[in-house]
Image (cartoon, rainbow, N blue to C red; front, side):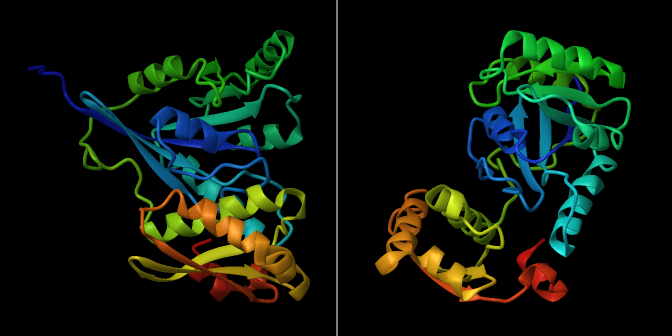
Length: 283
């Protein structure tokens, strides 16, 4: 039996929208704990995922993509992401290997401490010279370490995990071994529905869509889909209900067998600017 002290800590993932934070978290944990999409601002709330290793526990915090806000919702998402930087043991800042490091990336990294681990993601689709250029450019930030990875394929992720484990201080486990995420069931169902809306509607998907579970008494779950205009309601429902049916079917496949998922589309004008409703939605 090892006499080594238990080590634990919190690791936050920050970066611009669409750099692959959620995909990386799912890859690290080997399990889906947060929804993914190529749409900006897919992640709207902090999501915690827990990695258990012998004698070590890492609690990862996935955050909304940091961007130039256009209203109260965007401001809240940025605040949520920024607040996670000062409350953790290690900050991981992600940049996209396929795109030049721009002002937005610099704006994010300027808010991170010098001990930040910089991750150059999407090496599976970037050319070797792009990855090298990103690492060279990133070196100018003078951060503690740099890791090229592919969140999609897992390339370089094990090396990243080993490094993060080495940075963990002595401390107790924060979550039981069987827990991989602290997300409530109702939150997870609402997120799965929103993920399938993003996947099914693709380019037609209105950005101003939110989801929330209003009833949860298994096997019955009622989830509301909020849109801002009647025209958006028609898009989400689809011709003869085709879209809403497909969304429900695909979301249900990821839920407990026998679950009855009732999806209801409601118009809630300007929900993105209503403080009370944003609070209820958890943003």
